[in-house]
Length: 425
Image (cartoon, rainbow, N blue to C red; front, side):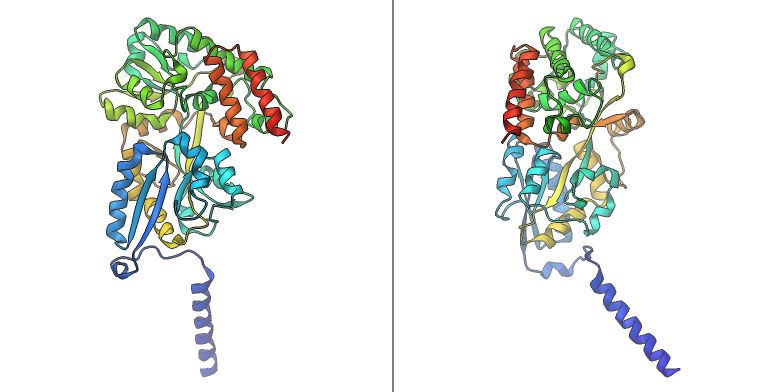
């Protein structure tokens, strides 16, 4: 009996040791005593300037729990961040915690081997698995998308009501969309604020192509040369941009307008819609809290050709710099940020829906977007399937060329020539 008892004790001891060594998930719940730990400063870089105060508040709470960890927040304009983030991260001195756009930027940073493998980190389990696939490469979870956004126009409900525009009718087919724009223009509004000077083309192209080429694999075929943007589906997309611009449904000098200017146009009720996405809602409401806003999407095809109702994207991919020397502190910060209470506060302050399993949405707009768009069929943002940044730039340039006066067919031919050169390198 004594031998059996001794053997059991040895087995329990071995199991306890294996349990302690066999998991990489770390205890990030320590408090109090950690104030005596060595001070460390981590860098958090991203592009969401409008979320600075929300993150400042969360960082202040994080410092109460982990007083030895300082988080320095550095924010870049989104366009600059897309082109320079991989350079900023190179030496591991900046961006211990950093963010990435899905698609081309994720691909660039991944090729530079700057993402830490997050597969065994505990905070990954807090996310909805179906919404964080954009941070996976070859089966490895390198980043987790934090935000769920709808990349389609924001609209002023009172402007629609004043102009006699019906929400459902507007989304039926292309003629219905054009009819709605005409009514809004007649009612004294700029129908669509189009920030062609920065993010507008890359956002609105998604809605304007979604049912002209409903196959989500189309951009992959363009990248292999199996499809061309001189094909009907893209030329027709450019024709949609051209029609909206020529009929005066965009603001004047659309290629010069910046996103912030577009937000101001809707907030001041000069424009009825903003052709970017749901992420703009909080910025508009911060300037005019009396507005009632929603999101809407054109169907660029006929009613019978309609496959998709709108566009969504899981974005703001959060990662840890593989070259950072402060990965433990970086992990603690992400774990804190993704806790239910902190994530819910961020959702409320930023006006963003999140990809986490457990979030409380107290915002009227967020609740309504979930109710109206949750049951609809939405397509993952097509632009982020263009995983080559140079090709993506050529595609976006074709839109700006059309807004600048180039015929759609010629703009497509010019862009395809560039793409052929890029693919032949």
